[in-house]
Amino acid sequence: MSKYSGRCDVYDVFVMIRKYTDEELKNNVKVYVGDSETPLELNTQKDLIPYYPHLISRSSYDGQSKKYIAHITKKSSVDYEEENYLNSVLQMLLLNYNRCKRKKIAFDMDAAIERSCLFYKDDPGIKELVKRVRDNGKKASIEGIHLPSYDYFRKKLVWTMIENGLRPEDWGYGRFV
Image 1: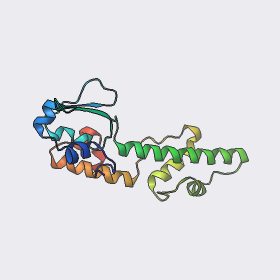
Image 2: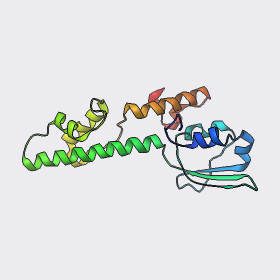
Image 3: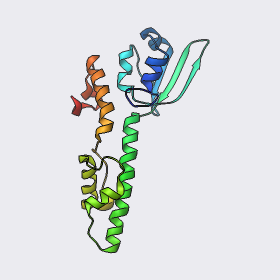
Image 4: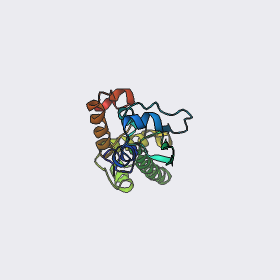
């Protein structure tokens, strides 16, 4: 499993398993991000680094011509997992919030965290999410909240980007620099 997402991702397929050379990437590989109809411009392995934690959603390989086409997810696996976890916590918090409103009792933030979270109960991001639910109810969102265990993978990617002369801020990783 990849050091950038904990899953079998772009890094695993292109670097660890298939070990494409720069020449092969440039001439034989097409990678499409999300629903894009335009492939990435791949001249060197370095061009793939920002996409290392993305998952390959589908691919095809022609052994005769040695052509490989891959469609990868729009966001990284790390982003999807973090978003899914935070959304599930938000849904549980909203259930607790609505229950408190229905029973006309105060929304106890500590009790809500205990009932809604399996992990990261002391994390500032979770506490911020609980505050948003308390203050905004159904309008609360996970926008801008990140958890440390997911940032672990992001930091690995940022260091790889820096080591290879890429600017993490250009790819949305500025808070790690």
